Length: 200
Image (tube, rainbow, N blue to C red; front, side, top):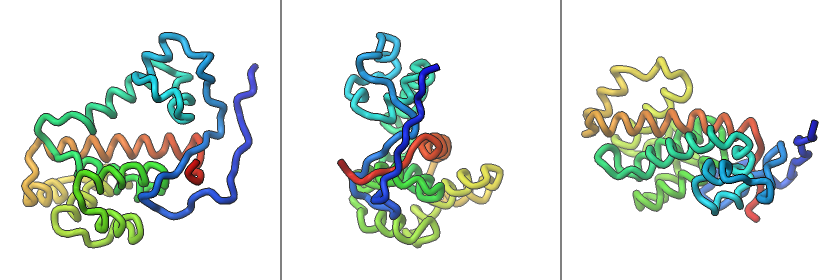
């Protein structure tokens, strides 16, 4: 049996939520690029992901990685109707903030800032938590995301009603659900496989 566990713990690892670029280190040994077969490359979907320890760790099961990545791309990069990209990213950032995933929160907070041009509000979410007042529409989006994250059965008619009051149609509500649900899963995966690190 090949030993794949690695010892890593940086005493300077990030402990506060931030929009700054930070790193991530796995607790298990990722594949080396020399080990990749065509099946692995297909699972990665993009050659640049071979530089990421996270994706190279997930590449140990390339078929699941491929399904995961196609799902991610369809939720966040599909521009057809539904929720604006900024608010899909807000849902991912709020979910990650609620779950305590510093790395994911940093990535999706930056995207939320980039697409919304509301960097100060995104900072307030990261610093103050998911209860901070971000205005009626964003409050409704964050509340729905957090309900789906903490106890999915708490998400129901009340949250859908608030979202409809803020102008979300069925496709936009579906996008919010997909964004929060995907990151609820992704956070738990990332939190169980490694830890954030200072930027390289």
